[in-house]
Structure formats: C-alpha cells, structure tokens
Image 1 (tube, rainbow, N blue to C red):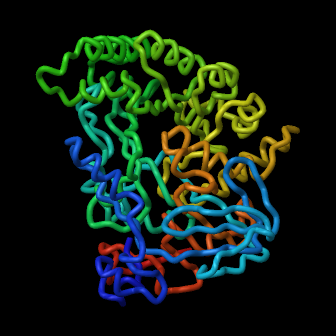
Image 2: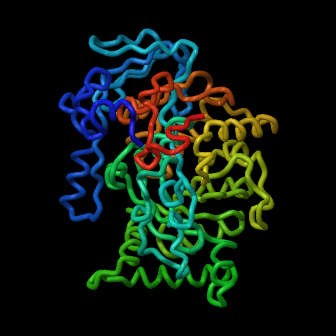
Image 3: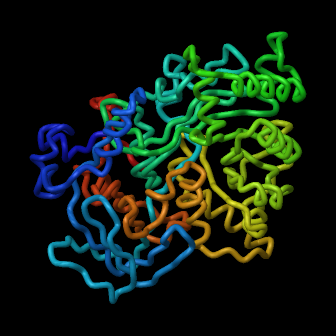
Length: 460
C-alpha cells in the first residue's frame, strides 16, 4: 500500500523528505538490512530486501496493554525506538527525553496482529480469474512451487488488513488442491513495489500440505491417484521416501524444499479437518522424520487436544466456520476454548480477505464460546491467539508477536478493547514506523492499483 502522506512528500521512495512526522531514513538503521544481506550472500534466491520505514522514538502512555503473552497492564507504558520495543511497564516506567508521547487513556495496546493463513496477493482483490494464482493444481504434489512468485504486492487487501485489522505480518500459503502445495512465505504488511520488499527478514519458509477431501476430489475427478484418503497417504509417503534419498547432485526444486523440511528449516502447515486424520499425519511425520508446525482449519482439533499438546503442534482454526463440507461437519465454536483448557497451542486464522480484517473479533467469538462452556480464559490470553501463538507456529516468535524489549516494534493502538465489536485500530506501527493513523486521512493507505478508481482507499 502507499500512504498519502508519502505521496505528498514525493512518493514512497522519498521517505527521507518526510521528516516532520516520520523521522528520516538516515536517522534510523534498517532492522532487516543485515539479515537481508546474509541471505543474499548465501545465494538464497529472492532474498528479502525489506527495509523498515522511518519512525520516531515513541511512548504510548495510559492505555491498557495486552502484551501478547498473556499479560495485562492497566495504565501502561510502551516505549519503542529504532524499530524495537525498548520498554513495557506501568505508569512508573520513565520516558527518556526526545520521545513523542501519545496519550492512550481509555484505549488499548496490543502487539501487531498476525494472520498465519492468508492468500492475499495470490487471490487478490478484485477477485478475477486473471488474478487467481494460489493453486498449481496440475499434480498431486508440487513442492517445487513457491507462493511468493504469485503474490501481487498491489493487492488492496493488504492495506485493508492493516487499517481494519491491525495486521502487521501474515503468512501467504498456496491453496489446498494438492497434497503438497508448495512453499509459503511470511510478509511484513508494508507497501513495496516487489514481494521481496515485503518478505519478513529472517522468517523461515513454510510448507503447505493438505489432507482430506480437497486433494482426493481434485485428482479423483480426473481419474487419477489419489482418489481416497488411503491414496493421499500413499502418495505422500512415497514422495517423502524419494526426498530422503535425494543427494543434491542434480538440482531438483521440489526435493530441495522437502529436504529443507526434513532438516527442520522449513515449517509444515498442514490443512486438515478431522481428528483421526490429524493423528495419522502426526504418525506419518514421525515415520518420515519431519514435524508438523500447525494444522490449519482443524475443526476437530478439540477431540485430540492431548495429542496435539504432546506433539507440540498448534491448531490454526476459525472461530465458528464449519459444516460447509463433510470433513468440516463436526466443528464446534468451543474448539479454541477446549484446546486452551487442554494446554494446547491455539491460533485463530482467517483464510479470507474479509476475516483478516476482523481477526480480533474472531478471537472474541472463540473466547466467548469457551466462556459460555465454563472455561475460564482471560482477554489477554485470547489476544495471544492472534499474536504470539501465530508467531510461534510461523517460527518468528523471537522477533515479533509480543511486546517485549528487543522485539520488533509491531504495535497497534486500539480505540477500545480489541475484543469488542465496536473497537478499531487507531494507529498501527510496523517496526516502529507509523503505517496507519485513523485520525490522519493523509495516512490512509492506497495501492497504486486503486488510484483513481471508485472506492480508492476505502476504509470501513
């Protein structure tokens, strides 16, 4: 997205001229340049070129803080500078000289919201066939494809997710037509001309897998394997066995990705609905020597919370979307609450260009369902479902997902409790740069694609 303020100052690439409100590029060092450089030096293709936008030392004072790791501080203070959080505490926390102080009285502060399951850019807005690049549905396994090669950075959905949902990071996954859909990529939700400029520096790649109805329907309808769940597992197991035998002497893009999974460098995100099938997948992972980081759409996760906890696997779930096909029939709104009660990792995801704008409300719905069942869950814990837990499953929790000293200053100031349907992001910072301000129309994000079109920069 592009900010109107940047346009006024001569375009997004002329940020140094906008020092009155944002600081200058020379005043801040890039939080990502060293990581990007390391990746480029190692020969990894398509390295992150992300450079954080300029920011100024900022103190948020007087707000209620949800720190993302289950903590709540009333009348709190959050300090950040040079792209990092440098202080979190109550009203007694001293504010260094030179900080811009923002009064948050009556408001709330959270870490930036993270969506672990998005297809923005691969299925962008407007949704037309020419833009539909999320499924390489030409073979049951396509580990060779990388979703970042389909991402359209001008998708207006990115800016809507920022302004309406406080989304600061998101994982873009291939679709679920294939057993192995390809590599996923984690992005910072910033305007950039290229996807490399959005790539989250230092984030591991994800690997999208899918079990159940989708692969067997897509390929069974073509009269080819797999057409059953046993076919799904047979194709998966043989593919993993072939990957184990890969010696790397002749480059094979698919096997390079699978080898990265087996080496623990690439994290598996497995679309799977039924509890029995998730249990089988965890056994297959043990047989083949990899680990599932998270099951996505796991509507029956509540049935195996103990197994998921024991195996250290997160469940990325909707609040109340189920029953739209047979394998999603047995979903219940109490899914998140029961998993939380079991001590398993809960993540609320969107899988939607609309719900990504309301992940806070999705978390609130799941929280309410758990409480109605008698499960005690705090507001602060539920915020962790869309911040730190998502970051853990994506392998970026040492950099973002909670408000802690040394982490990226990805911060949202809400005009009320973020678990209220009436609350909205008032300001959003990414790496300490103010990327959205509801009170400043000049900071309303507009993608190049939107310029001059009806609905330009529309924020509701």
